[in-house]
Amino acid sequence: MAGLLAAVLTASLAAGCTTADGPRDDGRGRERPPSPGTSETHVNGASVLAVKIDNVRAARPPTGLNAADIVYVEQVEAGLSRLMAVYAQQLPEVIGPVRSARESDLELLGQFDRPMLAFSGAQGRLLPLIGSAPLQAKPPEKAADAYFRGTDRPSPHNLYLRPGRLMSSAPGTSVLTTGFRFGAAPAGGRPETSRTVHFPAARFDFTWSKSQDRWLVAMDGNAARTTDGKRVAAGTVVVQYVKVRRSDFHDSVGNYTPYTETVGSGRAQVLRDGHAYDVNWKRPKATDGTTFTTDDGKPMNFQHGQVWVVFAKAS
Image (tube, rainbow, N blue to C red; front, side, top):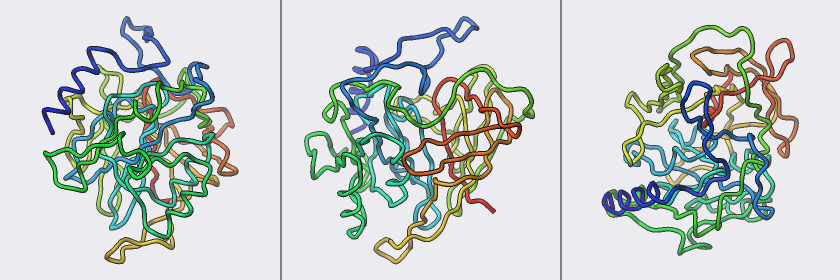
């Protein structure tokens, strides 16, 4: 499995990923990573690809995570975490490991126009809700040729997706109807070079790297890397404080699934450029994106590059 992934990733780097945005200069003589919402490329009415990615220790390192435009971090059963990676500008050769969906995903994905959701199953009573939601459900049962099992990890942490078998090309940034804005940092903010977010049984650390102009990600105290050895890094980190309540669904041993409410309003901190900004977030309904504004009512601009949104429980 490790050899297969390495070969696939090497071929991907040699050929170049499918992308809707070419390289750009960041103003300091370096190539600037593409950002959600920075172009208007849109392929034939397509929508985003959202992939549920396993994030327990046995599932690491992930594959294809650095190609995502947005990484959402949500709490699941037993206080653990799971990732939802959203792809629009690039489709890597392989993404994974892929795991199951949760009820909260349906509300979160409502901001996109019929998004494609890749996942490996769900609680039995949830499946009809996924089937009736305004999205394109693509579990292995509906797209068997897009998935494969690796051999270097035990099941269920070894299911991988070949996204090119679900969509022919990356749809482009206009499908990222998130409400996010990108541009120069606003005035204010306070210097901050590290931030830790705790879930009951998971921990995320974000450390500012001035040389890379990025927030380096660590999970449970260990530097996060992908299977190609590269560090996981974000241009912007959003710690969004939300209501987390018990849902009606639970796992096989009786652990109830937390439901993360992403519709509503509240407080958040935005980390960019080695600074932290206290902001307000608002999402009136599930079909809306989320807006972030400073206390004087001005839109909060994000840094270019991948965005991580960590849903933390509001006190």
